[in-house]
Length: 89
Image (cartoon, rainbow, N blue to C red; front, side):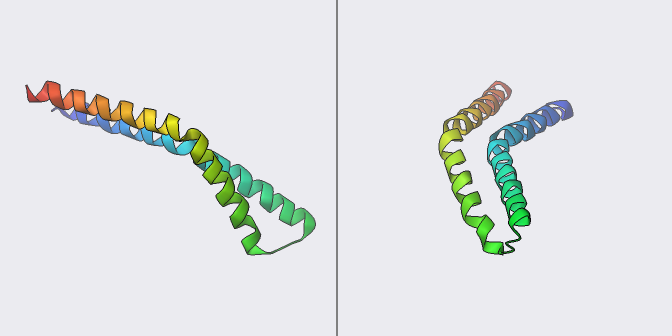
């Protein structure tokens, strides 16, 4: 295996990681900013208020995006397995 092949696999793995993690991270960010803005506008400075909505939003996002995540990870695994199979023979 050459260095460029290793870099290609690493690049594809990082891109897959970004695609899989981005829906959850974006929803967490948006909900966190919205709650922080609401807390700043109402001057409620309770730290625990932000946890429950963020957890619920992330849980719902995971339920919705799990098939997409599984498909991306399955495709990446098939790609890596195909490279191993072609290199092994």
